[in-house]
Length: 125
Image (cartoon, rainbow, N blue to C red; front, side, top):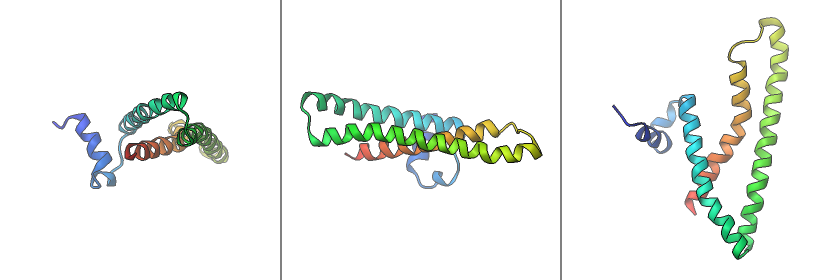
């Protein structure tokens, strides 16, 4: 049996595994790992920015805040768009059991994209 950690490393690094979609729990775990990675890089940056401020640390601090606000706004818009389009469909077909899951995916997609991009960008520096 393949260890779970090895599976996630393969999904995130090997191009062969990127062709196959991950399950929801695997995606959420990958996002949780990326979030921890981003926090472990950014918290020392914040601390150093308070001790000896520089233009680079100020830019990163501003970017931290604006990225979160942008991801939240995009997620809110995406879920509203989903429910607006679903409102017309619901009258004809009814509410399906996957509608809440699809709404969550629509809202979470911008946040997932931001976290993964940050983890990739910050791990290079």
